[in-house]
Length: 145
Image 1 (cartoon, rainbow, N blue to C red):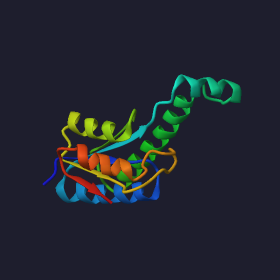
Image 2 (cartoon, rainbow, N blue to C red):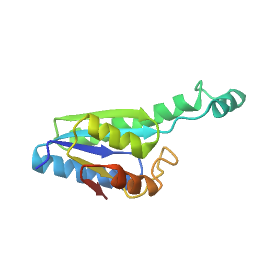
Image 3 (tube, rainbow, N blue to C red):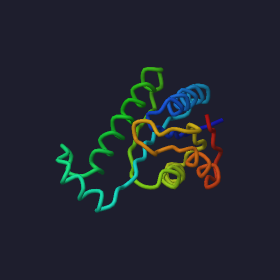
Image 4 (cartoon, one colour):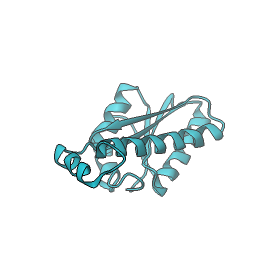
């Protein structure tokens, strides 16, 4: 049925539900599971503000990247603990809907699974409009959970 399933994760409850569904589908079809967490790049103006704030991170992008990496690693751990052996996690920056669709195309995914809404640990990642945009941009099936 499916060879490669892409689960887009942002750490929200709906994202976790989508991950669970992607894991179930990967088990049923023997597919490999790719997990993607996307964070938005911030402007130089926002980066300069972080110097005033005295953050432990050099830029807001570094903080977002670290958070996205934690989310992706946690999702990979959940998938691995479920018994899946072919699981890889990735982190990308950019506009979420486009990044998800481009990633799916590049990695020849057969299915994209994502939550209907989110804005979990990475504020603004899924706002409902991301899932809508992915369904409009994707040329492969999209399961919105």
